Length: 169
Ligand code: S3P
Image 1 (cartoon, rainbow, N blue to C red):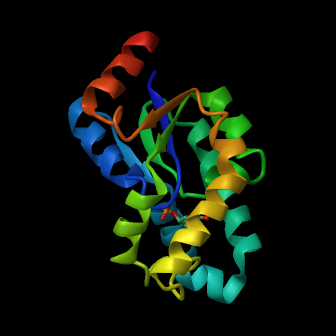
Image 2: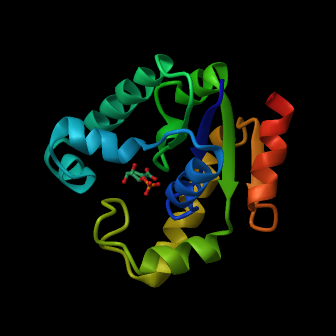
């Protein structure tokens, strides 16, 4: 049984690694934001705008809990998933949580190119973006720290994931 939850800040590469691991492990990969968009028939940006963040967080927690039924998966979570509705505790009971801990500098460079679809940062200039990411990271660290594994920029490679999985095999 392999249940991998990839958590971490926006732009930390959760979706990228989920896709990469899907090919390597040959197990399905899902993207929590994409599933919420399908269920709500709206983009995440539209949900934030029209229904508010609180509504989004409830939908997110609900969608996450559907993974109790699944036996094998890699789930790319949203940046805030770990921080609401006891989701971190729930994920830790279900499977393996991995925090992709990229530095704010890297996140800022990546995100500055694709802000428009991300409701929390779309109106920020580059300086504001960096300040926002630093603030968020500080707020969220306590949650991310509860992950079973933490991979920083130097450790983030296929071997690191293989090693983690071997521990569970
Ligand atoms: C959010 C991150 C987004 C998405 C939503 C809120 C956050 O996911 O869930 O915009 O609170 O950090 P990504 O981390 O996949 O961008």
